Image (tube, rainbow over all chains, first blue to last red; front, side, top):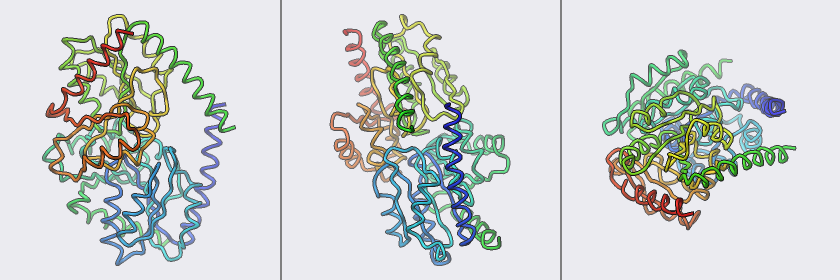
Length: 219
Length: 219
């Protein structure tokens, strides 16, 4: 019974994800599903991404949160369109919530759509939203043991942005351990150390996005 | 259908929680359900708590994680008994998992049992484990906007330990905003700023625990 229901939930989600994916493919929209713990710095990273890349790409954002419009307001203040989804206690976005939010966008005039998932290192990783790529943000203050402790997230993401490296001098964080653990769990994954606050290392993320966008429009 | 099942899940959980609560009451065990985002510092806080209070109280710990035995090993290294629950992807502990783990303890010789929940600021708050008190740990690097953004957690906990205050000089964190938001969401809640790393402010937590233990044995 429990298994059947879980299967149903995922089947319904996967149908909606397939719908989203076809739409993104047809409109050649690069869609990034950004996931992390609460407070790892997803919104700050998106603010900097909009600031640095909006001259080159038309960027929009879907914000997922349990409550408040705060993150969407921060993105709008940077000049990009943002739609806020409030899950009212729900622990992750699902593909149907995203499909509903897409009604507020004209994807023909959007190059890159970021979906900032609910801050949660567990549940969001299990739900396909139809995105082009799943990207995890891990932050230095969380500690380098989070990759083996939350393996489902890191085995399902192809890129890990290690944020807040400006705090490395004040914390015990082993970059070697983080890289080693990530390579064990997901050898195809890349890890980019950066700081959205100081902008250090952000160029690697921007270069990765440019490559992903080129591949997306060539399809 | 969906609502029925959710109700069943919670009813089953609540039955197990009631069983746990009676057991804790009969054995006069103070039980703290400690919840936070991943990497907020729950295990470091427990290491320091064991180190400072184990001369006075008999302390044991149940550790909840998706994977690995790392946190239980850290607690054992401090000299306290620890049992690790691995949820294998599950996003929270439930009362039945705790009931099963209790088989490994003799509660008659334990004064304080800490249950370190899975690192997740969303799901754990909805599940009663039979604990005496729910305590949330929030850490400075997560930002002061987490209280209004994750209201379900903070309206269900009676104490918020604001950890990593040693990082305040390097971050934009408004203590006033955090206190104001907490008072709006949960006026009965207390907030103790502290640093498990530098030990600053830990005495408030220890004093709170002593008071809670006294009330527990008086029942």
